[in-house]
Length: 332
Ligand SMILES: C[S@@+](CC[C@H](N)C(=O)[O-])C[C@H]1O[C@@H](n2cnc3c(N)ncnc32)[C@H](O)[C@@H]1O
Image (tube, rainbow, N blue to C red; front, side):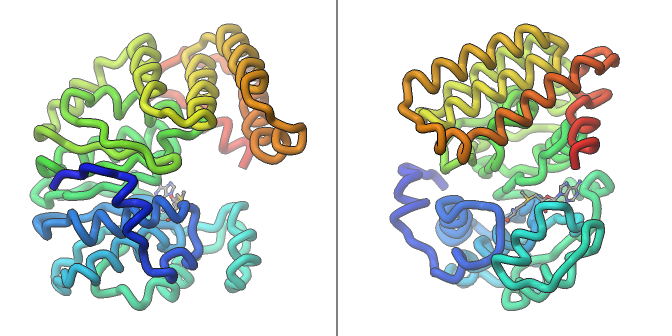
């Protein structure tokens, strides 16, 4: 399976309208990518990992693709979805927009997930638990891995350890938060496996990679354990070059500032942030209103992180004491 033209797959091959209407956090172009990957590229030789399913938008996109390709295997459901299913403070906007049952923070939303995805139960199996407690059976091959769950370094490392050694040659990995202004560890960990993957292209904030040769468990440990903070920076810079989109390129620069702060280079991080911000707004004619709408929350979050890092005393380490995890926990 070879994708020759990503634009073709994600934009021209339109998906059924109903997939756009499912409550979810991914864009229509990304929905189309998942639908078309399942419909045209899935070989039925392994599993589709849907890690971070929320209310099932990614799940139903894959499932509809399988349905249209006439792939059903009731016994071995092809899609394996993962979701903790606990309401966080971003849930309310979905309740309002989609007229869902009201939920409180900390409630379970698993019943709502099941109701919304009921038409596709023949295609998916859902793991409602913390993915950190999950061990993937090595004999279960993976053909497509959609990673929309790598929100902390710990989860990122765990998912790489569980899923990368199970990937079949030719498998696709979709990193949903790649061209995003936070989560720099997603970029440098993925880039650390560059000798195994080719980069296939970008759909909004997602990056698509294809596996060219199998990865063993030992490869994973060797690659991740040998990463130093300066390797992480070099790999992040490599990732920054993957996008031609102005705005996404700016987000990647903000992500570099997060990484600099993470690895203990706080004054360099602040300097980098000031410089890229000034440059971006000089080069692009953004109005004050656009600036507030599109970027303020990103800038505010990064600036709060700088403040937070001023009192962070643990030594910088890539997968150890996570300042990011402590920060989001404190700000949730
Ligand atoms: C960005 S959302 C996924 C959006 C989804 N793919 C869609 O199509 O709308 C990320 C999801 O990952 C889940 N999540 C985050 N960390 C998790 C963990 N450690 N274990 C299980 N689920 C987790 C969150 O509950 C959240 O619903």
